[in-house]
Amino acid sequence: MLGCVGMARAAEVRFNTDSLLRVLDGIVAGCEHIEENKQCMIAASRVRLEKAKGDSARFVALGEMFRQYRKYRLDSALYYARQRVEIASNCEWRDSLSLAMMNVADGLKGLGRFQSGLAMLRSLPDDKYVKTNNYYYYLLHSITLSIYKEYNDVEQNKYYEKLLRQYRDTVMYINKDDEPEYVINKAEILRSDGQCEEALDLLTEFRNLHPDAVADDATYWCTIAEVYRQLGNIDAEKYCFAMAAIIDKRNCIKTYTSLPNLALLLNEEGDQERAYRYITCAMGDIMEGNARSRLLQVSQYMPIIVDAYAQVQRQKRITSITFDVMVGVLVVILVVIMVKLRHRNRRLTEMQDKLDAKNKELIALNDDLKVANSRLGESNKIKEAYIAHLFKICTEYIDDMEKLRVSISRKLKGGQLADIKAMISHPVTTDALKDFFKKFDMIFLELFPDFIADFNKLLQPGAEILPKEKDSLNTELRIYALVRLGINDSTKIASFLHYSPQTVYNYRQKVRNRAAVPKDKFVEAVQSL
Picture 1: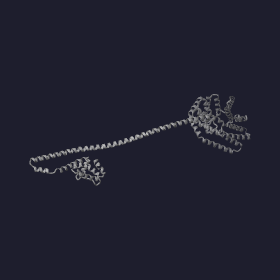
Picture 2: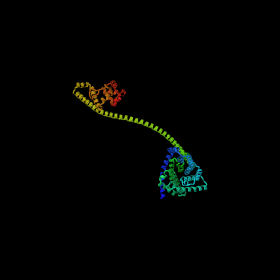
Picture 3: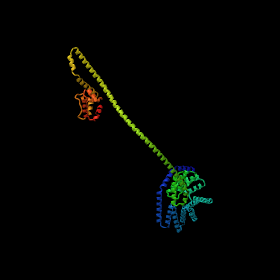
Picture 4: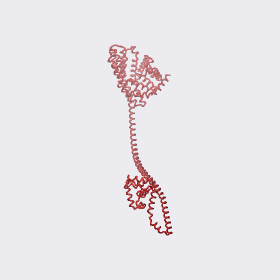
């Protein structure tokens, strides 16, 4: 049953790892406000120390200062611990002196002076207060563990391993089974004995029963992370170290192991940039806190992570240079293509302009052709009408000539020579010409009923030409009626109207002088009516 619980919690851990790392990223990037809060707490404790009256109050205030600096500034913590020893020694407070000496041993441990710290603990009185104090065995255990890690001698290691086991057993004995210290020590014993599944189940069950007890306990999360490491669950190990690192950073602790362990784990997974940020932050905190006991561990991790980060940066630079070169080549290619396209577009534009010009010429020619076709159709219409009227006039003149011949023949047979002479001596040209002009006017106005009005629009105001009789033309209008029909030669017009060419010229010049359009465009305007 406990195993199932542990596996379920492991699945949950894997699920939340990435989001937890993002939270830690934010804390590492912007922890100034955490530092400010810590400084405010220290300032408040210092004020209480300055206001403390009497040795007892100062001893308590110094203890508060020690706790403020214990995992923040270890040299300052040792300073205040020694002041506590001085007060307790002067006042002969036995138990307080033992506690103050434990504080000094704690400070020595943080500064890496393990043998001095161990000697301080061994000099404590062998009484019930000391032997049942959890803080005492915690210090014994942690200092002994640090010495154990420093020695490589097999016999020495066996000796210290035996001491560590005894200290863990004692801590379990003096603590209750519902306290974190008991569970953590028991889990460490199980883990050292190779019983990692049992250790995981124990830790997971305790967290389920007492979530508040471990919510702010970085030691718990580091312990369970080590268990997950031995079980090979890398993602869960990463999650637990991240939880411990968040707790340490939020509490402004400088003497932690969580962030360096997490950085090494991330580096092994290939996340060199995040690992570099974490190990740099950890080194800064350790140097700032003067935690020499942690400096050796981080100094071992630092070159590995820095080297991996440098390789990543070199690869990025190579990739960036390669990318820049490729971009440069592509830009050159694009420029060449653009130049060619621009040249081609220019040629196409020139060809388009030529085609547009030719198209305009074709449109103009087409318009001219339409006008010519229109005029041709109109000319054909006029010709058809005039031919019909011409046939009619010719027929009428033939009939008149036949009637004249018959009349003369009849008079010749009757000997009426005087009548014949009278008929021959009477001029018929004037009457015939008047009749011809009348018929011409009638035919023309049938074909162009608006000619007179349209023609007068081409003249200046007040210079209009109006015939005396309705449906008839006068000489000026008749001349330009022939021009409208396409007869522009004055000699031909004079022959048609039985005038001299000079007379026709004078009439035309007179009308042109009254034109409202340019004189050289007047004939063209008349022909367009």
